[in-house]
Image (cartoon, one colour):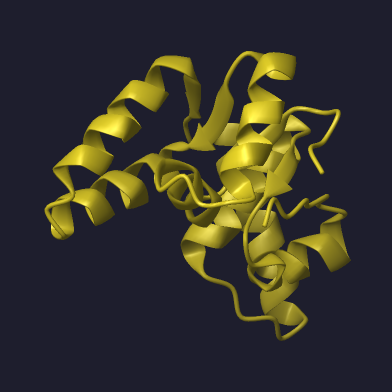
Length: 139
């Protein structure tokens, strides 16, 4: 099911789209006509590009470059970093361990009012529980 709201595509979902793995790929095809493109974090950009280059996946890297033509890359801004610092403090006090990239990507979605589209919601569970992050799994 594809959201009726703008979404931020997480790295793992982006990888499934690039590999044309169903149902993530099919869901992206339903999403694109509604919203005209994808949104990803600059961290997902880095993780995806790094992953392709690390394994010599030149064809997948070209698919990624092509997809970037219709993808908005969201960069870490002061409001995102300020919110991420707040989120990190709250979660550490509550005893939740968080990966830095997941925290920053999830906070990017929160600050921009976007639905988060991860493959593994558990990575974002603290942001869901404490900050109301909305997630949708395309797998």
